[in-house]
Image (tube, rainbow over all chains, first blue to last red; front, side):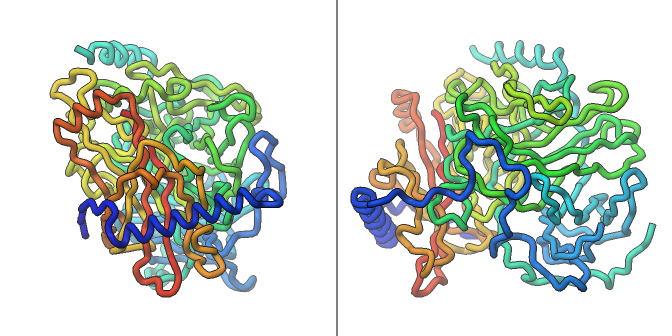
Length: 172
Length: 396
């Protein structure tokens, strides 16, 4: 890892970037001053309008995490660490699952008796899966990992009051 | 149950072109309690307030050359079910800012369908760290309220059963933010929106803040942008994850990026703490597509005087398809520094403040420091490839 922390205010490369940015600013300023029409509005609805119910999900752009595969192919679950497995729950595309930390191999696949969801169970106790889940009412292939962690105490009113009293005593 | 053969799984290299980065909001964290953000007797959405006060232009949709819309592609959050044998479900949800009442959630930006907790045989609390990948629709940039729905049990009541989420709290047994926290909107960093019958029912409620009631949901966001977050190294013994050299969640030099001390450092011991607070401040850059690359970090006291300008004005996307982000920092008067990313594309810039500088900052308080980083791909030839983070602000 490089941890070079030298202030190079107005150094050569930086100066180039600043000059380039400055040029861009000037161009934009000029363009604004002489524009015959306003810039194209953003595609999405304004913030003060309700979200449209169904067709709000645009087709995935090139950088999206879903990659189309032939309809006949089985889907893939692609972990960000470089591993892959067969997609679950009938998902046919390739779906990415972000995997934070060291890889833990898959032990088995289980089906939840409560709801029929299929999960991979990993050696570290994690579960991972793919599933068609709605996004604003439109089904979308999503990737999920659930990693067990220690439960924390519930913050109740008594604790909060105690903390606030401690907080009041924090200032000298 | 079925045992799978290991041969089913193969090493995969570069199958997907998608590249997202965690913005970095949850680096250097201790979560101290699980909480429903005050919505203890009602189905609700628990939401962090991603306020323009502290971050601007931070998850721009790279497909929008105007730099006017937000989009993200995944999240990381913790659920805790108080009774594992009766597993609940949740949704990821986000709101745009209300059109008439600033700093309050208004209309729904998106809501996912139901996500079921895995089955459990534990007759007590069960907690899961969720990492979820999806594609959300783009929406106009600005204040956002993002979090998860919190169900109540079909039988019984909270906290015997029901869902909650892990949070960082302010307080003397945890993280004590600096004096800048007093200007936080609505007095707190997170709120709950009641959703009786599944219908969002404004207004949202921000719990009382005060010295120890401020809370932030552990909620990380991944997007197709360079991540940039404010980072503060503190000498608090009650919040060791914020100490220099304590590496929690890919903070190379230590420090916290939370909305408490992360955005509101205590650089001049404003509260006469013991030991005296001597926070150091900085900015954390993350872009996995730019390993071992130069990063320019700008500091200023003001935003870009010409407004937020897309980098695509400088480098038209037709010829420079990989340049993205806006220029929101005041680069005309700012000071700039050069760092290099590590092999993971992470670079942490820190300002170690001498006593004289702390005195100057105290005399000038209250002040706001703006940060913005620009990562440059040194391998780009004939094109300009610059990845801009959003602008982060620290209140001193």
